[in-house]
Length: 197
Image (tube, rainbow, N blue to C red; front, side):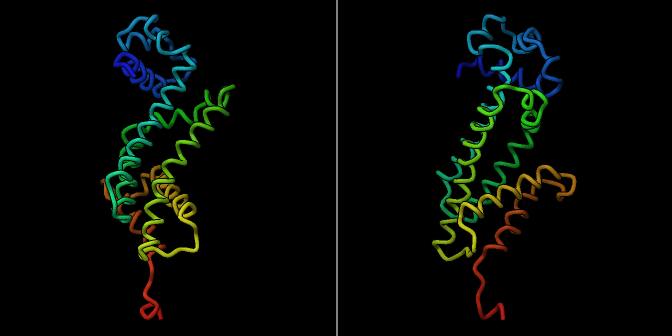
């Protein structure tokens, strides 16, 4: 992606997140990105295309950062901690972007099926990273669960999302994702049979 296209996406993200879709004009986006309309049309078909590309570019960044954790981390517990922190950091810094996912524009759009399909594909990649760490922990005898790694990853991701949606109820500071992973792990850790009696 060119620098100009990235500047347009950044400007559009701020404006779409701050106001209603129909109130945001291409003129405003151009002004904030410091480009002419012709430049916008060089990279995007129209305002709706730009709106979707804003959402998808954010999702792509999130998937890439989570996949980088999988590439560099071998330890399952550390991997899960890094995935949790990565997701929380990203959603905290780009919270407005994901507010767009539930916006009236998405609900009213003729393209929503296509967008949801793309969202689920990206979400699958994030779950696959968590499932990979969980599967490795199971192979090493550290984790035990009646759930499959994919099922456990689904719950893990759900815990993170619930924490993000209810941040006011989470502990202050940036340590709550680690506390969340600890809580999750306590549910899947292998327990010594003699200690549990």
